[in-house]
Length: 105
Image 1 (cartoon, rainbow, N blue to C red):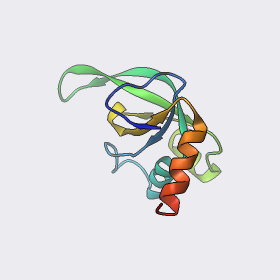
Image 2 (image 1 turned 120 degrees about the vertical axis):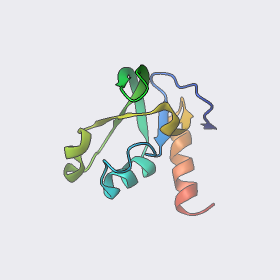
Image 3 (image 1 turned 45 degrees about the horizontal axis):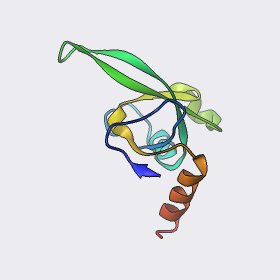
């Protein structure tokens, strides 16, 4: 896996941290995003009305989203590219990273 410096490819596996929309998401959903692996499935354009420009956001798909969390975004969520903290072409690499973090290795 690698820490990101702005390059994500569709199909990459990712670990995210919800930093931009903390007031919108329930803590349990934020914990799910931070502790599970998602897959970058596309990009979407969003209008930033504060700065009068279009920004590119990442569409991330998660497997096994608990039923009580599907109210937020079903199986996908839209994240800022800066919210993606790790990326890999191999899901297994990120599974190792999550296990290491879980056990403080």
